[in-house]
Image 1 (cartoon, rainbow, N blue to C red):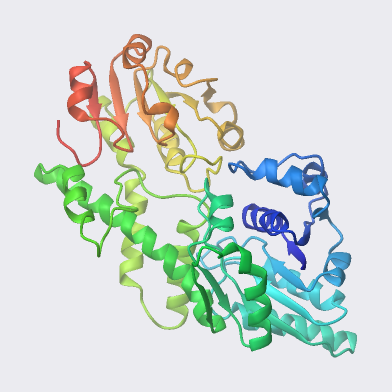
Image 2 (cartoon, helix red, strand yellow):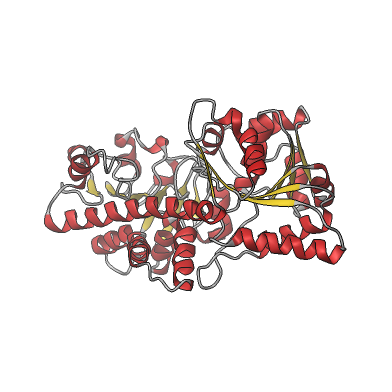
Length: 439
């Protein structure tokens, strides 16, 4: 099948590459000519395990192309995916200007029947706005061409996006026309050979499904974080509580890991966007507003523990930060808790040295030379007053704690992901702080 994917960000690049991997002819489009030239040369703008090799292979074998020429891409493709960003506006609602700009371009250049697929995360009602934008362009051209708009939300986890796309839990397709539904099912046929479902539904329900899924996962994270905070207050152990509730099949263990809050490109903006969508319809989302509030506070939890230990004035103190990305296996620092923690420490006069296996480049964009950057997980510790674990990369899990102790000024660990056993850390001679647990 001939496909265009407009937008080569996280979703667009993964989607286009995986479609090409299944033998489709895919052209990925972006207005950023530097990004397109880099992609042609095998330089990938994001870190995602397995993606670079797949991009290079499919580009070499000419199933995958990169261009800035949207006209040619649209003219040559039956299915046109819109995968541009939907950043939050000032009020938290999704900014659809890029989506609608692409829709207008498609309307300008389409030369026959086309399927236009909203792959970007968009609020309920966006498909209707895309349809209107295309129709207006066709009317302006004085032509009558048939087209259908589809909502096909993505459910990709950063750090496992290629695997998620190639072996999806489910495919959701919002569509109005039976013929279009069959074409979309054909496109995804080989991705669901393991029997996972393809759900055909109306456009608005498909759009809502994406927001509802992310809001539910964000809710689980904020819930267990609030439980952890209560545990700490009353003397309970959140690890044991998690075992006790997660074994209930109605609850499950996934996303019930206490920590310093969620971040990334999806959960924060999608929760905000759903809140604004509900507000616009006259409904107040009490649960989601609480989820957002808990998460906002949770990002400062380690900072509060550090201040409680050392005081408000942190001049002369050096803190080593283990992990910068909002989660492991990505370089994404959007809305990352590390940003809140580092900024809070800097504001109080502390010196900061950081290490992350992939996110250093992103950190330099945010902090510049205000902080120091280490080359490995031990160099970052040298002469620091404490180490602060923010992102649970595997490299930090089985560290040589005798070496850690020898490099630190004091054997103090602030564990924002509950990676270590409090009793074992105490036995090793560390002053240890975690979330929702007692020593």
